[in-house]
Image 1 (cartoon, protein in one colour):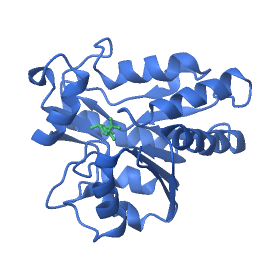
Image 2 (cartoon, rainbow, N blue to C red):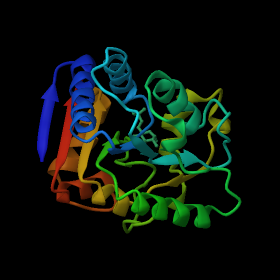
Image 3 (tube, rainbow, N blue to C red):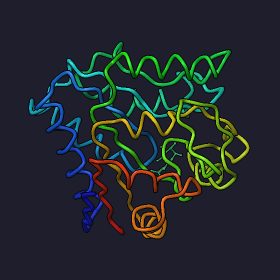
Length: 236
Ligand code: GLP
């Protein structure tokens, strides 16, 4: 594991953006696994700047996102599809038809999960997966459990996750209670994994995840087994 501690969110974002940019420069047709949440916002901003400056060309890139709330359509401002369009896709020269997010409105979420896993396989897997981390150690929406779930699947969100994500909604009651998330298999099969975390309130879970025992009760801990993992953390 490559564990990097930096002193500011700006530095974290710059490093993460540089790693993703290098991936795209070296392999223009990369498959990028992307994440939502507040942590990657700075990274996306830096990537947009690099693209605008002509330093990175996303025209041949494909992206697959980790997760989506069940019941939120792409035009819902709280949906992860909307988030990605707003914070990244509209600001870089990616072909929007090659950007994928699980469909949270699919009538059959199980079938949607199977379709999503088949899509990732057809794309040849993920070249680099960007991840944030939840306060309970969740990655994507893989919540603490007795076991790791391999495939893209339906999850009931932990009360603590609903609480944490309420800041993006008008009230806690509006936070969906279910989501569809990529499973641990696609994440672990990504050729590279880049996890970013910032804030004092993430310090404890970062320590437990990357320096403690590997357990499905802390889903991110499984990443310790990944052969090419980079973690960037800043306390501020
Ligand atoms: C959500 C997302 C995760 C993300 C987590 C942390 O639950 N599904 O992918 O890592 O939030 O969010 P933040 O970066 O805002 O702390």
